[in-house]
Length: 169
Image 1 (cartoon, one colour):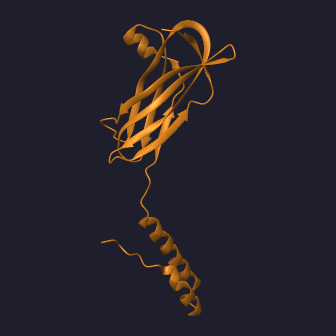
Image 2 (cartoon, rainbow, N blue to C red; image 1 turned 90 degrees about the vertical axis):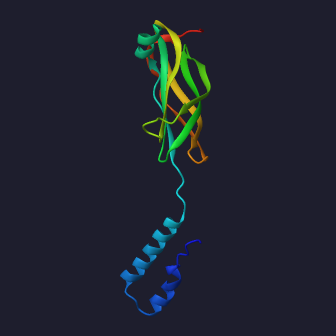
Image 3 (cartoon, one colour; image 1 turned 120 degrees about the horizontal axis):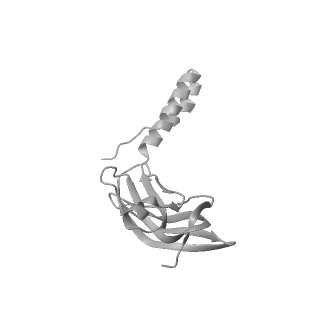
């Protein structure tokens, strides 16, 4: 059975004619605004945060290779199941922009923080020594618990210099 909320605004003309104090009319209008907002379902809010690409010490430590890495986090105000993204590391070399793409990458919701999904394995091998500038961008969708899907996108902003150029490998 749906809840019926009375419309106090219909009372305002009658209250004004009855010379009700202004503060009481204002309180009735405020109650109407609150009632309308409470009756509307809240839309989930999700964001994507793309960090700047960087020379990865963790990839070097655990894999023994130099790499440029970009970390991404999706975050919602409700629990999510997983996030899918198409991510790109943009490399600026001699006035040209090269795209290094990661297509349809999936990260499940974190087991401890169900509102977040972390992308920590997006990297490309690089040759250490050359100064190159990088930026990151991503777009995708968050799949929430319950089936709703929310579109998200972000970029790291400006290009950041790193001493490693992505290789063709």
